[in-house]
Amino acid sequence: MQLAQRMSRLGTETAFEVLARARALEAQGRKIVHLEIGEPDFDTPAHIKAAAKKALDDGYTHYGPSAGLPELRQAIARCAGKRRGLEFTPEMVVVTPGAKPIMFFVIMAMAQAGDEVIYPNPGFPIYESVINFVGATPVPVPLREEKNFSFDPQELISLITPKTKLIILNSPQNPTGGVLTAKDLRLVADAAKERGIWILSDEVYLEILYEGSFETITCVPNMLEQTVILDGFSKTYAMTGWRIGYGIMPPKLAEHITRLQTNSNSCVNSFVQRACLAALEGPQDDVLRMVAEFKRRRDVIVDGLNKIKGVSCLRPKGAFYVFPNIKATGKGSSWLEHYLLNEAGVASLSGTSFGKYGEGYLRFSYANSVENIQLALESIDRALRKM
Image (cartoon, rainbow, N blue to C red; front, side):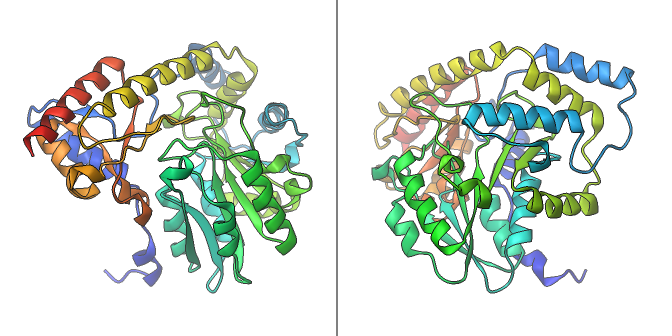
């Protein structure tokens, strides 16, 4: 098979590969605790499922507008704007099947061969994958443990060149749970405004925040004019399998992103969009309960990891991941990922799955029960003592 050369530049999301290996072990009768996949273990709230069922009965089974149903775009603009203290219009919203297409479409629309895109590292692996795929050059900005897994804004600014077309931000962050500060965002915004560089702000975990207030670069004056907000329903409402997300951006760019949507997916299925309307406009009690439980689990896993010899772990402020330092074990990240899966029955991800600056770390998702987390901690402790 003779594939296009660009296919060699396309990466993957390692979590699904580890999940497959873990499932294979389970098929052999092994007990595996899944801390690898970034998916809430809660069920989608009942009123959202009921809205989807009603939408099917009401005939929402046909094509809709490529940018999304008007009523959903209106609700997203209203709710997302209220959450950030800003005013959005429906014309700024493009609804896509999951949040990843916004990532893909924006990078594709903004960058090409010869351009550079700055992105967080360790960071969500699809950033680097898509940058490479479109032929642009990925420029990693390190997220450092000593800065609570934020970046040094002056270091980021030093990476800007005349070729820089886009800067990707993510807060709360995957894989570290780090949160960016208003001060750091202002410094990046000033540099971006001065040079006319666009920002892709991945805010998909904004509701899963345990301390402090959510900060977005769009709140810096005039930054809304050159920023795309990436958000969705998967994490906040436990709707990963529903596959629906959205971008908020200047209307002129939204027209181009909508054309990419038309050429690739046509539109998001209509009954799911009606369910998302119920998610936004209905009760938020389930979200609050879910975040409170995530916080409880965070404290259990952080406290437990810090009791294990050779492991140290910061307490993240957001998302549902921890990124423990395992350098004192004397083992590399990838080796330890495989060892813990096979020896301890604990599925995790190597820090290098999120970029070269992830070496010396593992990522655990605590989107699992406290009982399973405690079981995993005991198994990890035993396995590391045996090395």
